[in-house]
Length: 237
Image 1 (cartoon, one colour):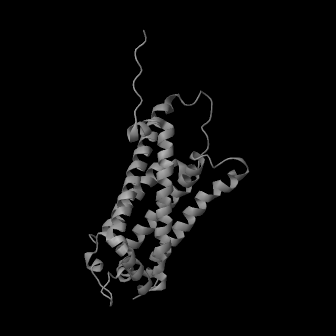
Image 2 (cartoon, rainbow, N blue to C red):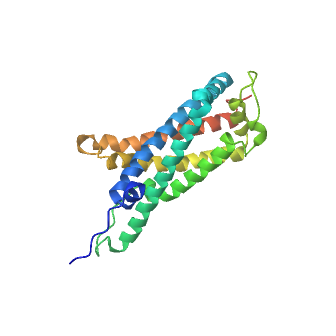
Image 3 (tube, rainbow, N blue to C red):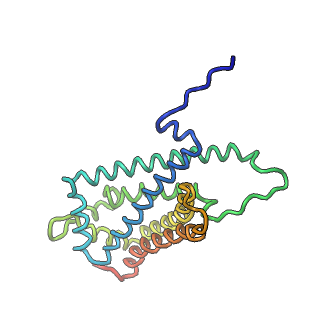
């Protein structure tokens, strides 16, 4: 008699142990995270509209659902980030394990873009930047004197905090370099997300292939425009 088969794993563990499951988890969490990155950039562009617009937005956002909305959103995003990293680690480990026997002798490896080759590196830089960004503008651990400024309405003066911070060349360089890494990561990951979800096929394939680079370019230009405009004197207190 043959040995009984092992019971199939269920839940998140079973999902991550399956290659297709890990790819789907990465695509779905990536969709959420890309959506957050884009909307975060769009709303932060209110920096150009002045202190009233940005401070009112930040104040109203924190007040949604009695202040619980922001924490619920943060918890959801954190769960997506953890699942995204778990899926990436699982797929990376499987790719490394398969690499020694992947190619027959004499066959050339498939040409890939620089964004695809450096996905792990840009992902790590993006994660480190996320921690830095939270400590900087969310927690006030970095440059705490700027974090505790209030505007004339008694609200957290987000506008002045950001403008004051971006007067520091070191901060500007950090944000520009990190957003370049983020752009490379988005360029490949957004396109791969559509492919994983089965949306990159047929006559739409050339169009879908351009979405990743387009999203990456928009996010890059939008994010660095704020930092560069401040240090260039186009936005000032």
